[in-house]
Length: 201
Image (cartoon, rainbow, N blue to C red; front, side):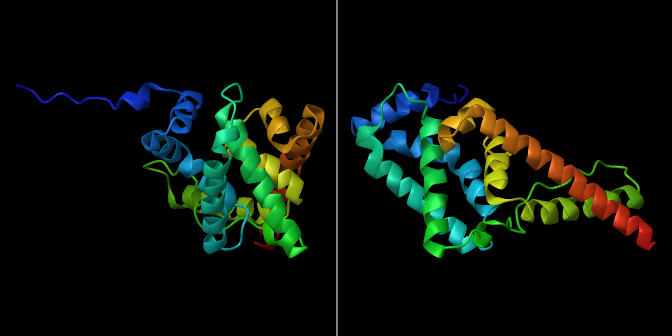
């Protein structure tokens, strides 16, 4: 007899249903939510902090806040929007405590999006990709905090402008403007760095 892989009954539930189960006392539902969102949420903090330990502290604090606020969660609200609003507010609170935005101006140098190097690429192509990745890291560190935050929510969280507007609690037009400027500044910064490197050769 072949062994059949049985799916956990909670795996078929969406986030909102899992939260409802957790509110009813099913701890396994929380575990499922945690594992679904731990990667993107952790990277959201990691790429805006200088230190991995700080990102870890903020990340764990958000989940603690999720537990404390779970009773007030309404199933009509999308869980990811609710989760990242807590994360965003935690970031803002920490920034205010430090009384400087510089702590969040530079993404971590580890676990940044890596350039995809296809098999068979010549060393020159690989070198160019590595160089572009380095410029991306540097240029991200130069973005204003508000633009960096919405950029990471879009690129890491996969949120639309409308959802980011809900998380950050500003108008959708303001989010679109911040995204537009962030992409524009990144393109200009990377192009400038590449041109400068070419001029030095």
